Image (tube, rainbow, N blue to C red; front, side):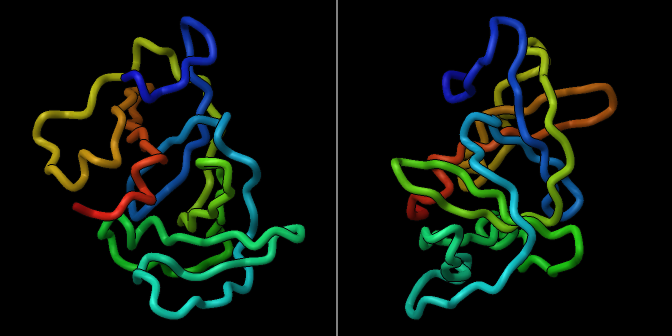
Length: 150
C-alpha cells in the first residue's frame, strides 16, 4: 500500500474511470486534466498500446490505450471515451479510457492489498482494491504502466 498517496490519515482522493466493465482508480494528485477524445498522430514502430501523440496546449503528449495495455482489447471510441492526462517522471502521458466517472474520497480502511490470486502480469499494475458500498475499485500503479513487460 506504500504506492497509494494518502491525502489525509483517513482518506484517499481518486479519479474513477472505466475500462471494459470494471472500474479503476488513480490518485487525483497525479492527474493534470481529463480531455475529450481527439486526433492522435500515430508514431511508427511503437508498441500496439501506444496510440501515438497529441498536441495538448503546445505540449506533445504520448497517448496509451489502457485497454490494450492491460490486454482487455482495443478501446472502442464513443462519446464517453476520455484521455486522462497524468504527470509521470517529469512528463505528461495520456491514457485512453472508456469513461471517466467520478472523483471520490476513499476511506483508507476500504483499501486492501491486491488479491493473491492475481496473475503476475496484472499484479505489476495494481496497488490494491477498494471496497466502496457495492463497488470494487481497482487501484492502478501508474509508474508501472509505462515499464516494459518483463
